[in-house]
Every structure is written in C-alpha cells, then in structure tokens.
Length: 132
Image (cartoon, rainbow, N blue to C red; front, top):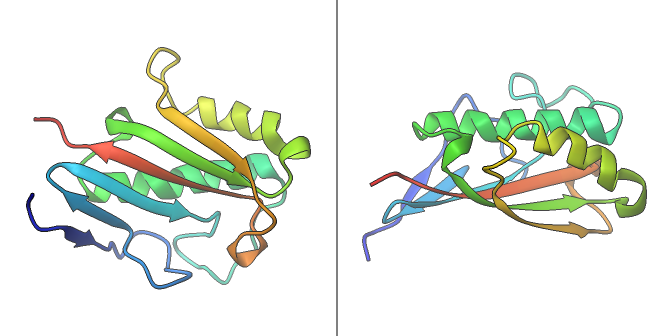
C-alpha cells in the first residue's frame, strides 16, 4: 500500500474541524463530509431549507473533486446525514439525484442524526476512485 496523500484546497470551504478535504491512497479517495457553508465566506448564514443546503453541500463536494482532477462520475459511494429525516428525506433526495446520471448513481447510506456542525440540516461525504 502506498503512502496516503492528504489534500486541502484553498478554493474549498474553510474547515469546521481538524481534517483534510480529502485523503487519497492507491487511487482511492475519501472526501470529508461537506457542510452547506459558502466557500467564499463561511461567516455567511446557511441557506434556508434542506434543498438549498443540499445544493451547497454537493457544490462544495464538486469543488474538492475538481481540486483532485475528478468529477462526480468518479464517485462510488456517498453517506448522507440529515437532522430531520422524516421532514427532509424526500426533498434532499430530489436535489441529490439531480447531480448524477440516472443510470450511474453511487452506492449510498443515509442516516438521521441528532445534530451537525454549524446547525446544518445535511452533510454528505464521498468515496471516489481515480481511473486506471
């Protein structure tokens, strides 16, 4: 196994905890869960509603993927964390699925949680793989 590479990108949102934006090893990449923060100004209030927050989270993940020279087509798996599962699940799904081709959806886990950093409604992380 090769040595891990710890990636951080100035274009990506400011860290809300001690982590790297992504860690890569042997072509496998774990992207840290992204929050719905504005990558240009993390002091701005979070967008209202799970749909707007899901769009911001997905756009933030795309920033990290692009920093790696990758895109959503390289994503194999996602984990979604939402704070109000019953209320927000369907609306989050509508936004989430709009980012992927219908026949190329990543594997996914979605769980309800009691809270997220910055009082966000949603957080998503990803596993991606570099093409050979």
